[in-house]
Structures are given as C-alpha cells and as structure tokens.
Length: 146
Image (cartoon, rainbow, N blue to C red; front, side):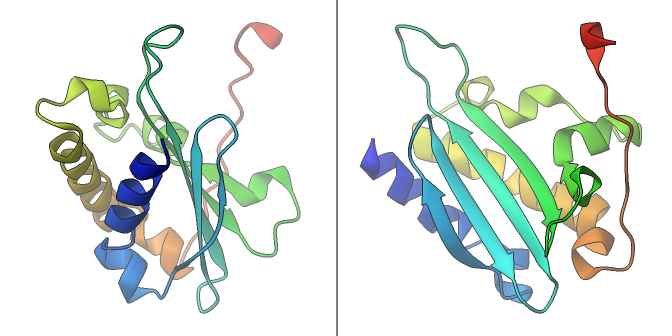
C-alpha cells in the first residue's frame, strides 16, 4: 500500500497549480486511506486530497474526495468540499469522475486521467477561490438528518 501512496503523492506534486501557488505537502494520514494535505503560505489555503483505496473484501470505491480550507481554519464554513461545490453551482460535474474504477487502464493510467480532470476542474472553476479573489459558502445537505 505504501507504494501506491508514493505514486499518488508524486503525481499530485506535479500538478500545475500546486507548483504555481507554491503548495507543499505538510502531512499524510495513512489510517483508512491516504490523505495528502497541501498548504500554500502565500494563498493561506490548504487542499486536502483524500484517496480511498479499493479493498476487494469490503469496498467498491477507489477514488478521491477533495476539499479546500482557509487557513487559519476557524469555522465549518472555512471548508469547501469540491464535489459539493460543483453540484451546488450546477457546474457540469460527474461524481463518477472522482472514482478511479470508472477510468480504463492500469492504476497509473487511471490516476493520470483523474489528475487531468481534477487539474482542469480547478483551473476552470476553482482558481478564483485558490487565489483568494472569492470564497463560496454552500448550504449543508443534511439529507435524512433534517
């Protein structure tokens, strides 16, 4: 599993906006998946990229969840979950794009396809948030907990 973590980490560090805005990896959590947290001091933002590996015995999910956090983090509204944001803004978004098993090819090919989608999505819809020109607070979908 550690090999997968290294492959993902190295690929994420190649993303253009990660380099451009001088995000650097500050921590990795390897408890129930892999969590890569990138921090940009100049933009006062953290990007949390959580990878959930596929476990043949109990999981059909192999994919990512991504959030952006203001720094310093103070309120729940200081976190923006990318998937929820795209849905809320009615941006053509397919949750299936965050699941690697929906791409064809080897693990590295599927990872590269996802990273391409992820980078394009950020550059098109989220760059103003990264640059600090705006921040979006979206309502929480409480589902059946209302």
